Length: 584
Image (cartoon, rainbow, N blue to C red; front, side, top):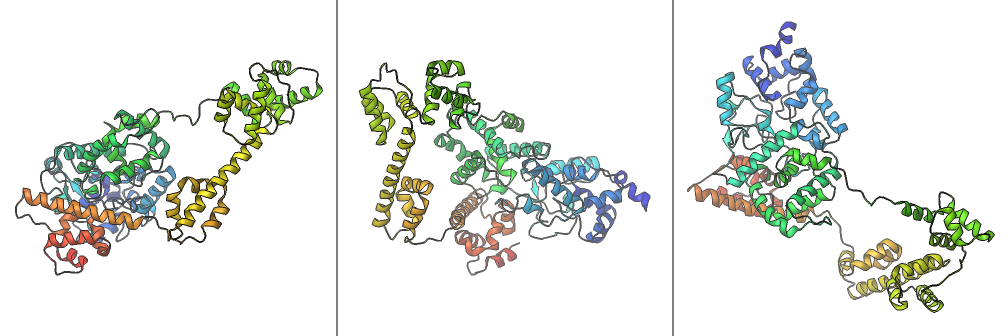
């Protein structure tokens, strides 16, 4: 028995790009096992272990039974499952944890940990195959097998033959969940109900190429959200919709986005789920340095801005822009002023001024700074240095100080005394205590203005809630929230309380509208190209996997349910779940 186990890999070698599920299915048929559980016991040592087609567990047990003839367990995880599709966007620690679960752990929560369940795209990976590849496989190997490239969430076209893939309904909706299957016996059907547009076909082929390239990257290669944002900004710049200041011209971008979203809506993962508003929100999230939960969403945008994944990686690896320009030597000296001069020159300057043995200019030359810097250090120590007015005479000097004491804006002071704003700033810094007083007076004036503006809003519109009042006076609310929060809470306590939420109800309502509209459009298009067209709801579940959410919670999707009832000709049914069961 040991010899047979050791020769597993030799007797049943891997086929090109074959998944682990495909190899086990071939073993199941070659072993003539009547029950799927028998194959699981022989290969994995448990009745229901290793039978998942996308992320199977028990790989370590299989490698031990094959005594290494199938390769290392880590290589099987990387090359024969779908983990490599998600790994580049996940942290190295998470990928290592996922690999450990595939080898000798439990995969019960793995899809949640990888972000599939919260992505809005679902966690199902329908089995797919290319008819041309199946024909070639039968000619060359005697059997068609499941190729890993075709199983990727981004693959709906065969990159090699440019043909739409066929999709199997097994492994979906808990059907044949614990069964082994090969393409020839998997009830494959086309996912497209009619001829696809040229743009949609091109996009599908590009997404397949990007997905295949993504699987060749090492784990955590694209896990830095800031660098992802930088890479996409580079793509926007290539499209000419990013200004030099880094602002996106959404008006110019929407023309590209509209066509791109229309093509995406013709592919099953995104079918009936996208519009320009949703896509703009996703792109904004990427550009702000917040990651998306599913790599497929990144791929959808990469196809719009880049010709290949290598181009994006070059932009991703480019040096990040500095948060602030490099600090010059003069700025370093000024930064030392804020903390009293870490290099000790501020203390030396003040000491020399107090001793009275040197002039301010001589002290500045000795310490290697400007005389104005010495004057600032002296002012911070409470010393008033002697003035040598050239243009700023005593009258204008006194007028400037009087206005600054009252909190007048520096620009207005400069206009009144006929000097530059830089000169006014210098006055603030070299007169002891003047800068602190000026900031205090201006801060208090801003507090009075913000409080008056907020009181006008809450007194005139006492019936509105705090959120509504905030929209009426956003500037006053922002200032008070940052600088006078206790007073703001006290004055807002009488406003009607509003139960806050995360916007899920609004988002679902908009999604219901999109599903209903796009479903009617798809049905009309299919009936136009194929008169008398009729399709089971299970087929619609392949074309648009998101419809499964409707069957699970029909009360939350009233508009879509109405369209489904018309589609099925079953107005008398009240339970959409029964419709789902009857029509599959």
